[in-house]
Image (cartoon, rainbow, N blue to C red):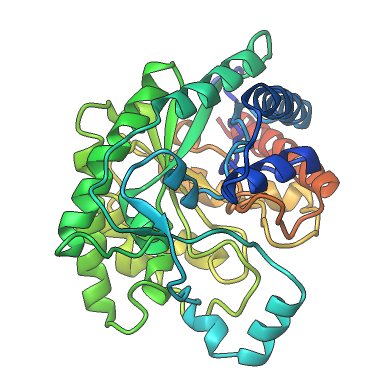
Length: 382
């Protein structure tokens, strides 16, 4: 490891939205008239502010914080044809249903709220102007900022299928293919704008205890194979090194005892095209799985981005703990193939986040400090 080498820092994407952004995004999601110029002014200003805060915290690879989006998957109803609002029951995670007292208390104390889209027609990408607007905001925000790069999130075909029930296509396969072909437009627009595309794919893990909750592990793993195929097909014209993918078991405080073990899905996950894989590695249910990563057959072109900061608690991790977590992975693939990240986003749904916004920035600061400690130790060793 050369004296100049650093362990880069990043995060999963979503960040706390200021209240004026939350108000606009919810109004838009309710179908109320929203002035386009006002939306651009408020959201564009929030993106610029969030990029500055990321830079101040020491984040190398920054995002727009998903400022314009009600949620990381359901925002697509504003961009794709074929979706209507409906009253289909929302599937709850099996781990929460196992503890109904905890589940109901969480619901009473408030949580994310969003309109649920249902697919009732043919899917096409109708509103490319909306992703163009997001791209323009991010480009303006990073201009002159000392960042290594910027990324923008977009959902996998499978996570769209998980949140938006299908009442139009004859089979899940047809539904996944239709979503993938439509989202291909957004995926390619992000890369064409010079940014790294991040595919958010909780369906590859969280899907086990939601979408496939009544199926066997074997059936779920077969499903993961199909979901990965849908991702790869949609990415067929994008180089692997321009894409990263986030693996997630659900960004919520809960028992998580129904989470599928990493070692059961890791082979399928590693067959996904994106060169960079972000995953949970800090929370109490998945921190131990560096052992599974050590035993996996990781292709030499893959970069690992372990979450070394938990996004569901207000503890500010000690930088030394962050460094130790990073070192589990530099020991597996070497420091040149590791970035330091977060378990998930800090604002998965607009207006909702378990972590106080001010603590969010402090946690990202601890992330950067821990990455510096880990890199210094690597330089000393080498």
